[in-house]
Amino acid sequence: MTERLVVIGGDAAGMSTATNARRGRSVDDLEVVVFERGDWISFSACGEPYYVAGIVDPLERLLVRSVEDFARGGITVRKQAEVLAIDAGSRTVTVRDRAQGRDEVVAYDSLMYATGASARRLPIEGSNLRGVHEMHTLDDARAVRAALDEAGADRVKRAVVVGGGYVGIEMAEAFHHRGIATTLISADPHLLGETLDAEFAEAFVEEVRALGITVVTEERVACIQGDEDGRVTAVGCGDQVYPADVVILATGTVPNVELARTAGLRIGESGGVWVDDHQRTSIPGIWAAGDCVETHHRLTDGPVNIHLGTYANRQGRIAGINIGGGDQAFPGVLATAISKVMSLEVARTGLTEAEATRAGFKAVATTFSSTTSAGYWPESTRMHVRAVADRPSRRILGAQIFGGPGAAKRIDALAMAIWNEMTVDDMVNADLSYAPPFSGVWDPVLVAARKLQELLG
Ligand SMILES: Cc1cc2nc3c(=O)[nH]c(=O)nc-3n(C[C@H](O)[C@H](O)[C@H](O)COP(=O)(O)OP(=O)(O)OC[C@H]3O[C@@H](n4cnc5c(N)ncnc54)[C@H](O)[C@@H]3O)c2cc1C
Image 1: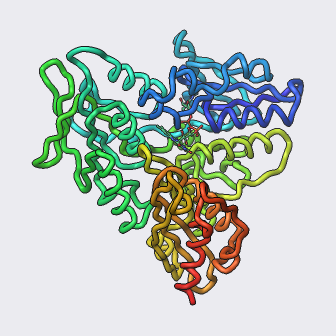
Image 2 (image 1 turned 180 degrees about the horizontal axis):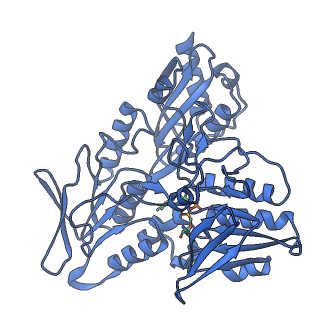
Image 3 (image 1 turned 60 degrees about the vertical axis):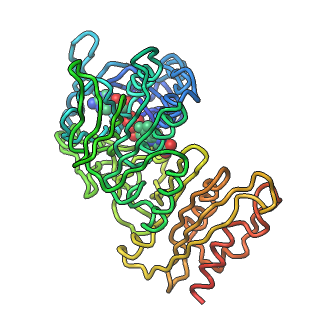
């Protein structure tokens, strides 16, 4: 008899699951049905800031595959179909067809829970004024872009971005790129939260300011002000008022776990749905992947809920392979992330010194500056590196980088070293490439290993 896989959520984790399960089992053996509550499936939220900036156009370029593409591959996708409830006892879901306003009960043999995350909503007075946006969905991106493209007296001249995380800095870039005076407000002492060590983050903030973006730190937004037409005019923080024609609220994201909680799925310490290393939840037949799940950090072994497309795709793939008859485990994460603001790139992997110390390591750290190419190369720019190691084991634990074009992607070599539990001594003579347009003869990755070796003696 044909079994049915029902997938809740039609983006990275859900569609990766559907595709990989389909590869493993024939259409006669497994029917695959995806329910997506919105209008978009298989899209790149990561590209949204670049659409707002006008670097990527039109919005549809952010779509990876269509309903028709999936249908050709033997996967049924229904948009505007919201799963309202999961009954694990009878192995059914209740689905609302939002267009028709009709509910139906659909049976499953396997269920993938891939509901993602939503923008965190802070109770800030004035959040519903015209011109105030979140930046999570493609609809958010379209609304902001439309506001920027408006001609005439309503032209956006000043933007305020609330929240100094990755989405916040990328939206600051988008506005700055369009010639809009931009203020970035962070409640933290720095940008990018605790993903960089404090002193390194401070230096990064200075570089963002040098680009012409106003960065305000340690300020909490108290209210958003508007005119009599209900249009935003300013953001208020204590005594300070920052004028704004458009405001982005980018104060983080929270996993969508309510449906799972109601269905009786175990929720982990980090707030994400608990899964084992095969992406199985606490209830047989139900799997979960992506922003909504808890995973484990490879260095601390602790539970984390990190919202990255990289993990959503990989976990979805693993779940799909397993549903398709395979046997694969998700190996955990190092929290490797990369971003940029204009020409300034930033990346991190593993643990900061502060995180490593908190986790019980005897951490040492080094910070130094280098160049992205040979010093004499015309396009060479400055880059700054911080690297962390564990004193007793001499293992590399983490790295942070910021600098000009070509700086940040070097994080991948460091991430590979950490992934493979290399010591600084293993790494110092690693056979990395060199030619003047790409690096100095000592690539900054090797310099990091050398500096840590000097520290450790
Ligand atoms: C502006 C922005 C920039 C980003 N940049 C990067 C980046 O550069 N690199 C990176 O790695 N990550 C980035 N991310 C994060 C990345 O987009 C997410 O980690 C990824 O999309 C998570 O995929 P997911 O499938 O778990 O969840 P989602 O993409 O959130 O998809 C979940 C889907 O489930 C649907 N859904 C939820 N509940 C239901 C229900 N009850 N019934 C039916 N459907 C439901 C939702 O409508 C949604 O479409 C960025 C995110 C944003 C917002």
